[in-house]
Image (cartoon, rainbow, N blue to C red):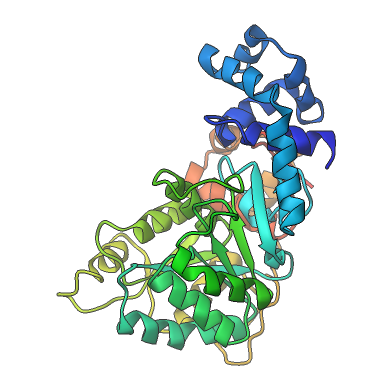
Length: 371
């Protein structure tokens, strides 16, 4: 690993130092000079906008090189890849979200380098209905070149991973624990199957991190951030699956929901999403049609013959061209929204489309620039 990657990894191993803090440090020092944090004093770190207590915690953490060396050795000995925000292997689709994770740990293949993904999430108590729905929809998604992303949990998540594997597809399990502390333990055989079938286990947490409750919202952000759309299958009104769906909306991604019986508490969450504007899903064609409209795929997405290995984009709209001209130098989303008189949410969607087209890129500090 180069110095920049090692510094980013080292920062991520300090308790209390999350992506937002690292973003402040990078904005202050510059990405190429981020290793200057090792020689900085507390008052210098505070200039980046962090508190005195956190700056001291960073200084103390960076003085402990044993933690960094141990993490690198553990990853090497367990065939786990460490991918930082500055690496080419980092998922471009995830890089576009607001304050993406600084480090990803990956066991298996870098699935996102070869295909787009759809997330399928639902209740841990999901039953036969969810299984029927997934068996109906996921095969078409696999045949049309999509990988399947979910959270590795019991219930709907496990059903989605298993269906993808049985259909000969690729699936990614994003975990709320370190990859050397797999959770839930009951799913260890499934996790092995995911890797053996060409998929991947992914985590943003240090290798030996325990599956504590506060990890799972960050896990859910990655699930939606890796995917063009999130499909919710059986979810109660207060459910982690709905949190994933709301993250998807915040990230400018598509949200789909499968309806169920009106008296089924595990469908209440799906119905709530539909009321709020999520696309109702009766079949895979509903998903493909929506992605065609949003991403301008120049494919007949509803046909059986469609094979979307990568998103193909039509020519830019007039507004996209204006935005590209404006982003000749790095610009923030707020600047773009203010100067071009466009809603922030609309800007996020357009930037996402342009990033998929390969026409814009986002730097580590969150600024957007024309490629």
